[in-house]
Image (cartoon, rainbow, N blue to C red; front, side, top):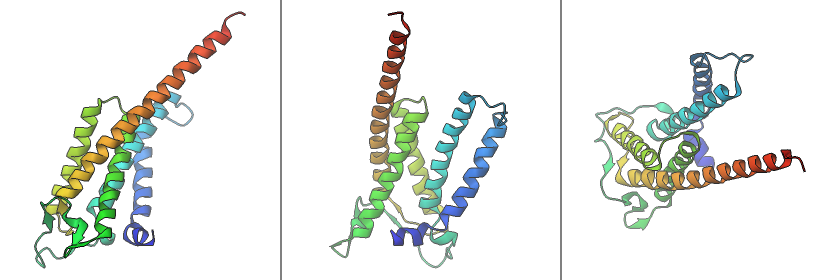
Length: 195
C-alpha cells in the first residue's frame, strides 16, 4: 500500500481539485442553482460527474507516471510489449509487481464497467466496446508520449476483461435495484388500498 501511495500520492490533490472544478462546471452547464436544483437534475449532474471523474482518475493513474515528470525522449526507445502476460515474469522468474499492476488495471476498468452500467442507459456491448476503446487510447498514448510508460497487450487484455466483469456485475446490481424499487412500489400501492 505504501508503494502505491508513493507512486500515486501526487495524483490525489490534482484529482480532487480538477474533479471539483468539473462538478461545479457541470452545475453551471445544467443551469441549476443550489436553491432551484431539482432532485432529478442534481442526480443527473452527479452521475455525469462520477463518470467523468472515473475517466480522469484512470488517465492520471495510467498515463502520467512519477509525479508527472517526463523523461528525455531521446534517452531510450519507447517501451512496449506485444507478448501477452510478458510483464508477469522477469528473467524467467515470477514477477509479482507485474501481476499486481495487471490486476489493478483489471480493477480500474471493472469499476468503470460497474459505474457505466449503473449510471448510463447504454447497452452492455456498447459500454464494453467504449471502455475497451478508452483502454486502447491509453495504450497508444502511453506509447507516443514522452513519459516512457510501457504500452502492453497485457494491459489491454486486462482493460477488456475488467470492463466485461464490471458490466456484468453492474447490470446485476442494476437489476437488483430495479427489482427492489418495483417491489417497494407494489407494496406501497397495496398498503394504500383500503383494507
